[in-house]
Length: 140
Image (cartoon, rainbow, N blue to C red; front, side, top):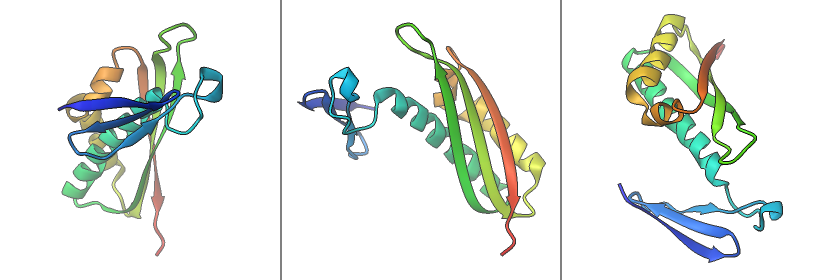
């Protein structure tokens, strides 16, 4: 995997990786930026959400669960001092579907956490990561 991050102006950077999709990053106005892009630490959190989300939904589909909606919400706390690493992350999965088996959901999350998601493995070095979920029965 390769990536390039190029300064555009001020504190605005444009990042691209092998997939070719651009990601604009910027600092807040207080940090000398224009507040025109995602913060790099936010990208870590989004990466965790995407990584585990793709794992869990893929496993649920293989388990033939009737999932009609899926969301991953993340809440992270950072160290007060530099380098402001994540110290605690809550990953909350919201699964909407028809007769979704809670055991299938729990096992899918466990597999993502313990085996498949490299973002979780990396972030677990500095942060306590808690996983919670809720299943919403789809009435339609």
